[in-house]
Amino acid sequence: MSSSAKKAVVLLSGGLDSTTTLVIAQQQGFDCFALSFDYGQKQKSELKSAAAIALQFKAIEHRLMKISLSDIGGSALTDDNIEVPDFVKSDEIPITYVPARNTIFLSYALAWAEVLNCQHIFIGVNALDYSGYPDCRQEYIDAFETMANLATKQSVEGNKISIHTPLIKLNKAQIIQQGLLLGVDYAKTTSCYQANSKGEACGVCDACQYRKLGFIEAQVADPTRYQN
Image (cartoon, rainbow, N blue to C red; front, side):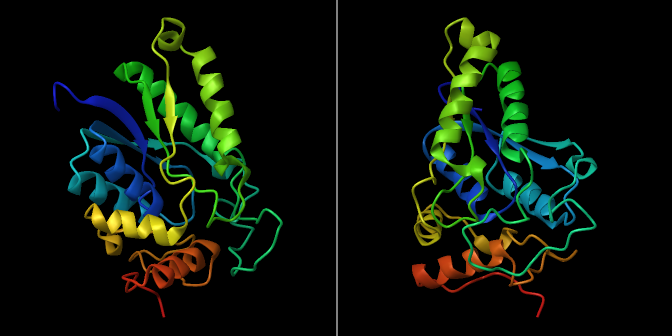
């Protein structure tokens, strides 16, 4: 760990966006503490990707928190009674939305940041090429940051907490182009909502379709391994 670098907690799912966010945080001079979640999601391949990525990019520490959003259900990602649908363009929030997921994840990140005496949290939310989840919007992030600065010991004592969203105004193609410049190998990332045990993507869910389009628009070969 650099004696001069600032510390940051980085939410790392193992997907395209969170991996790019980790590398951006490092490029900005932060010593990064990566945080992943086994939250009851049906597919676990992303956790293998997260571990490999944290190791490759030399995160100071990588923690895997085990929580159970599957006990709540209500999402195709966590509920065995709900199938992950194929991508359909719609203005409605899809069934792949996991209730309060980013609020829960950011709360864990906030707690760890307090223990680390760290005032910076990075999250790879994106408000352009995404499925319309309400907890990916800038106004949500602003509201959480306001809450964080009211709710924590370090902020009350004068150490303001900042939530960084370096991808929020970028489309998938721009994210991919930036990540490639920073040395990200997207073949090692897992974005699919129903990847198999080998990490192979379905190619038809929301996450796969936005990822595919990103590589097409970036005019870069798609390195994703697909099931078929």
